[in-house]
Amino acid sequence: MASSASEPTSQSAAGTVVGTPEGAAPPHRPLVGLTTYMQQASWAVWDTEAVILPAEYVTMVVAAGAVPVLLPPHGTGTSVLDSLDGLVLTGGADVGPDRYGAQSHPRTRAQPWRDEHEFTLFAAARDRGLPVLGICRGLQVVNAARGGTLHQHVPEVLGTDRYQPAPGEYGQMIARTEPDSLIAAIVGDTVTAPCYHHQSVDRVGEGLTVTARTDDGVVEVLEGAPDEPWLLAVQWHPEHNPVDVRVVAAFVEAARTHAGRAGASEDRASDPAAEDSAAARSHPPRAHPREDTRA
Image (cartoon, rainbow, N blue to C red; front, side, top):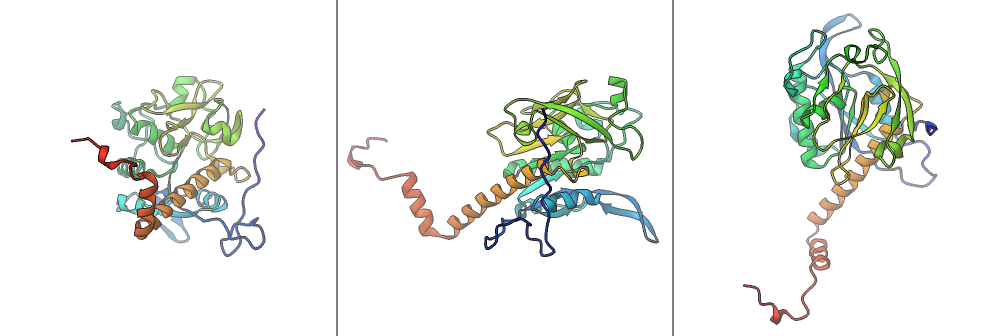
């Protein structure tokens, strides 16, 4: 039986997480980057190319207790990650098949500039040990970046369009999670969620584990190795279900933990006495230094 959805965390006008015990300091709000779209858009009297992101992503991250930072797919250098505590690879256009050595399907719609941007950010985030959450396209970026491949048009593979019923219409998927996985700890043994995709994982990338599938075999969750920095990628759209913040909340908690470790390291670096004390604890003096016969 699936675990029940938790109530969304709300925010006060000042940005403090509602529900903090009276008199207690609010929890640290980590800074998390969200990748964005760059394409034609219309608003008010304008119809022009714009850098955009559906507001659902932003409101979900805020509800989970983090501060969102939008990263445009043009001009963003990897140095921005030095100021962030986590990275969200959001949904959007198809990943270019050149990224995994395939010919383009007639239904594939890729954006090479966004691929370059997100593959670069993902690699840099892993190098820095940042928690990463991939959503829909984000899962496909993670898989292709690790050497995996994609089915470019799921209806030709499975004979169903239920994962993307119509333009602008979300489908619904039900996935069963693997026991003892990160996703099982977050959502339980099954999860029902909105989805919108026509591509999916084919060959799984190096170092990734499939931890949830639908009944017809579509990969819905990829996780990194337990000894690596936090990495979770889901094929569904958690941001489109505002009453269930569990996936995003788990990511924000990982980002908060990372921020705490980074802050502790900076404190030690700025306090030589603390650094010396830590070194002394890690390397206590030998009881008989004269007996050291190393060359």
